[in-house]
Image (tube, rainbow, N blue to C red):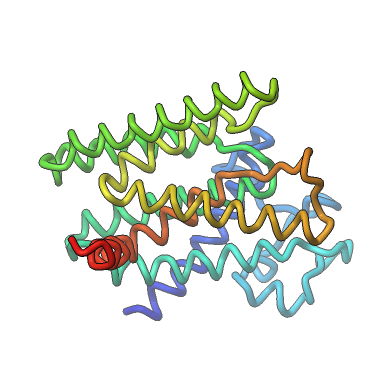
Length: 256
């Protein structure tokens, strides 16, 4: 079952690659054949086998020999692994819960790689995810709806406050509008204490990566900018799968 789910994730990850490429360009991601971004040659079925086509073609287009992004197989493998982890860690084994979590995780994957590649968090993914999460809580888990909405609003207002204060003090923008809308979704999705753990991990990893890039000479301190969406998604994934364990360990350390 897990192997089949991983393989399904590989193929679904290939479709998510299409979303990541086409949504920022406002291209139709339902119709139209896949093509090379460089030579525009239509790709055949044997060019689109997840991971294997990339390996056999040595990471290059079959037709123009242009080097392809390593993010393609990385995204496919990540989707497969996250599909397996989602199945293992979801709170129930109902088909509705499985489909819901796989849908949301897929949206997170698209947001992660779209922000990483194009610097945007697309509303075409974000808004449907918010709607589906709200409906899932309303129908399947109504007891958590109010607290999760409050967590979403709290995270939203927290980020708005950070953005406003930073703008007043430095006259520069910090968090983008996409990040602010994303944390509302994350709070709605995770609830408490998940959203707190998620944001803590996001800020911690974001700071560590920023420091490493500055020390490495890839970024300058005064002008260093990083897309924050990937760190928010990374924190959410950790919180979803291991948040309860982290929370219990924190309570144990505090003696509560």
